[in-house]
Amino acid sequence: MEIGNGIYITKLELYDKYTQWANRNGAYTLSNIVFSGIINKKFGKHTPKDARLANNGPRVWRNIRYVE
Image (cartoon, rainbow, N blue to C red):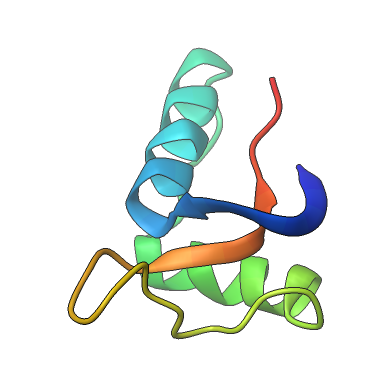
């Protein structure tokens, strides 16, 4: 994960990346709700929990992005 102003990842995209990683590594997959809670706990001071790209747009994690 990378932290920086002006970057974002949709919540669905980050969860999809996580589930792909978990499946490749034979790890247990958390539910989307539990996973989002963990991301909020770890990165909550950097990103608002209920951010959207636009009115009724996709929900996003602002100021963080996935880095492979």
